[in-house]
Length: 556
Ligand code: SPV
Ligand code: MG
Image 1 (cartoon, rainbow, N blue to C red):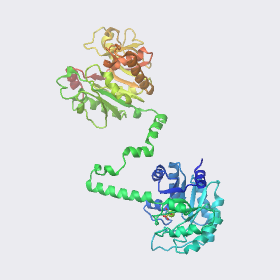
Image 2 (cartoon, helix red, strand yellow; image 1 turned 60 degrees about the vertical axis):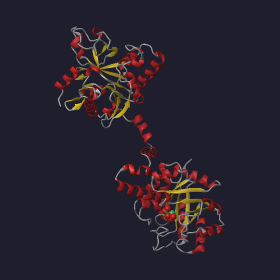
Image 3 (cartoon, rainbow, N blue to C red; image 1 turned 135 degrees about the horizontal axis):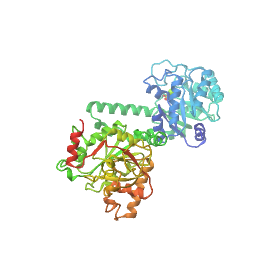
Image 4 (cartoon, rainbow, N blue to C red; image 1 turned 90 degrees about the vertical axis):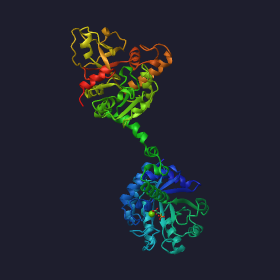
C-alpha cells in the first residue's frame, strides 16, 4: 500500500491520527520508531535545522528535498508542511505534482501571504491572502494531484492573525467547499478554548486538524472528544534535541573528557543500528569484489616455545624484537602493505604483552605445545569469509603474501619449494624437521625449481612425514576462501564429534592437534588443498639459533 493510501485508511479509522514533526531522515525515523501514525515535515523544524527563521526563506526545492529524505527513510506517511504553497494557485499546482511524485502522502497549505511568517513570532506583520485566493489554491491542488489518495490539508491562520472566529469559520468552510480533505485550524492561544469553540461550530464532514503547541495542556483525548481527527506535535523532537545537545556539549566542554557525557548519549551501536550498518555489511559481502581489503588475517600467537628460553621468559615469541621491530610488527607491516587491516591475534602465553594497536584479540589458555588447532578455534567466529591464517613466529617477504592473495583455491598453503632443492633432490637430511608436504604432481627427476602456472595439490602434510617423501615445506601461512573457511569449520566440528579422543592424524587427539592435522583431514575428505609455491624468502623463529640468524640476516 502506498503511503497516501495508508493515510487515507487512517482517516477512515475511528482512532485519532497522532503525528510528530521531523526535520531530516533520522528524526523521521525516530518519530516512526516512537509509534506515531505519520510524520509532519515541519517548516518550523526544517528552517530551524538550517538555522533560519520559518519565513519562506528556504525554497520549495529545499523543503521538498528534506520531506523526500524523511519519507524515503520511513514506512509511515509523511505530511509535508508546504507553507502557503510557495506562491499562487499556479505555483501550488507544481508543488503538489512534485511532492506527490516524491512519495509524500499529503501536504498542508496555509492562507498566509508569500513570504509567510511563522504563526508564533511576535511583532511581525501578519497578512493573509483573500479567502477566495486560498480556496483557488485548494481547488488547484486537488485538481493537480495525480493519485486518488493524496491528501490536501487547508489551514487557516485567521485566529493567529486576529481576524476572529467568524472569519476563521467562513474561511474554513470555503476551503472545505473547494475540496480540502482536512482543515487545520491554528491557534496561538494558551488555552484550547478557541479551537474547541471552532470545533463546536464546525458542521462540515471535513475532518479537523489541531497543532497543540501553545495550548500544551490539551491532550489527544481532549482533542478527539472535541471532534479533531488529527493531532500534530509539530516541533517537540527538534526542541528536545536542542536541549540535549546544548547540555551535553556544555558538560563536555567543562569536563573535557568523553566519559563525562556517557550517560547522556546513545551508544555508537545504537547509531549503527538506526542507520542500517548491518545491511551495509551484508551488501558489501554480496556485491563488492573480494579484494585484499576484505581479507581477514588470524595470527596464531598463543604458543610457548621452550627452545627460545630465556628469550621468551617474559614475552611471547611474537613480541621478540629483531633489529627494532617485533616479529608481530613485521607481520603487521606486510599485511597492512597488502591492504589487510582486519587482523585478529589469538594470544595465550604472556598474552598481556601483545598489546599492539588496531588488532582484535582472542585469548586461549592452551599455551602448551600441540594445542594449536584448539587455539585457532578460539577465534572460530572469525573463520568466515576470506581468511589468511598465519603462524605468529614467521618472518616473510611481502611478495609471498602478494602471491598467496592471488590464489583462487578454496584452501591454499604456502609451500617453500627450495626445501626440495636442498634436501629431497640431493638426499641431504634436514637438520630440523618442519611441517613437510608431499605434493601431486611430485617434482620431476633432476629437479630444479621453476615457478609453474599450475599449482600442485598437497596430498600429505605434517611434521612426521618422512623427509624422503616430502617435496616442500609448509611455511605457516595459508588462505581460505569463503567456502574454504566454511569447510574448515565444518570439518573441525565433524571430526571432533566423530573422533572424540581418538588419534587425529599426527596428534593423539583432535584436542591436541595442529593446523596441519586438520589440513590432512581435509585432504582425506577429498578437499583440494592447493600449494602456492615460493622459493625461500621467509624464516621461522623457533630456536635461539633461528633468532640469531634473523638478527644477522634482517635489515632494520
Ligand atoms: C510547522 O511546524 O512549521 C507548523 C506548525 O507550521 S507551527 O509551527 O505550530 O505553526
Ligand atoms: Mg509551518
